[in-house]
Amino acid sequence: MTKLTITIVSPHQDDAALSLGSFIFHRKESSINIVNCYTVSEYSPFYKGVNRAGVMKKRCKEDAAFRNHTPKKKIRFINLDEPDGPIRLNERNMDALLAERPLNDLDRVHLSSLRQGMAEHIKGLLLLPLGVGGHIDHNLACLAGLSLIKENSSIAFYLDVPYWLRTSISKIQERIQYIESLAAISLTPYVDPFREIWDKRLLSQIYSSQITAREVLQIVNAPFMGEIIVAPTNSIAKKLALQAIGWTDLNH
Ligand SMILES: [Zn+2]
View: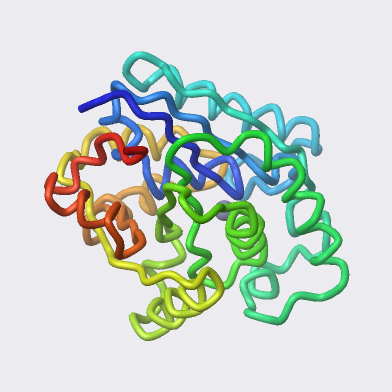
């Protein structure tokens, strides 16, 4: 595989690993930048009894461990230090954060700040969360990235794990159609031929403040271990298909 720069926008510090862990592991020749959007966080369902600083430290340690378990360690984490949904919206109820709703004024102000933070870090192939499942942070991370793409950008969207695994097919299709209409593109799904269950399991388990071993098993046993990407149906996508979705250099 040729060398490729890949930028993955990760709403929270576990999303890139849970949604694309195997994909990242097997791109040994690529330089991978992971842009973590919401790194100011107290969200830590399985690592309790610490304050905000303690949670943030733990989550950065998880990222460091992820990097250390990846071949060649060519991963760079960029933390944008935006406050996550529970802090920004003063909303600790997960169901409320996952409820689909139109953007409000607070979201729009925040979106502009997120967009500015993200802009200088987008290089090479851009992988954005599709924003399936309604999580407001995932939706905003997707929209901020989408607003930065240019006509000839190499872009694809990953389905958000674990949310898409709990979402109906019709809801996923609805989201795809929404993004297609926003970006005036047509999207086709792709899976990674190099996926490997043990790597995915190992890398997902690292994020133990966010996910249980049982949930990790559910993810690795899901279709394609949850790793599905939708990419524009144009010459780039055709090239992808011809190369058996090898994710080689998409910049040419
Ligand atoms: Zn997330």
